Length: 150
Image 1: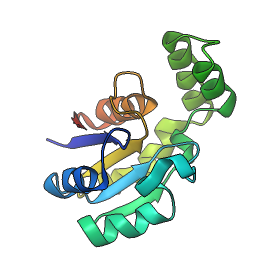
Image 2 (image 1 turned 135 degrees about the vertical axis):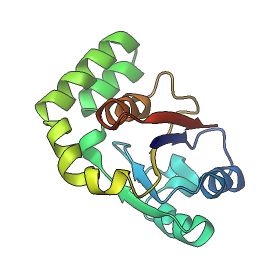
Image 3 (image 1 turned 60 degrees about the vertical axis):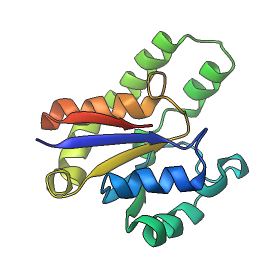
């Protein structure tokens, strides 16, 4: 059975974060954040995270913004102009417009069965984070389990 992992960096120090990556033998961390260069991201700021992942956890890094929400969707949600349910609807529509299923088949099919993949975003918990939505797409497509690293 294939496992798909997710992790958020908020409320984790670097030690906890990289230990979770190492302990779960994550081969590829896919960063699905819209903005991965924010100073607020600390150790998870690009390009630092790519270096730290390799050195601390022997894990590769890939930023894949095709899995990120549209900026206006994210802004509206953060400003409470839309609910989480509305965010999900808009995110799913964005994924359809990007032909995300075909993209996943093309870019990830050969990787998913050979490597442990983990999706990174900022939220501490996955329940109201789009990384969970991305993981669910992969899980459905590849009949995989989802494991949220906490």
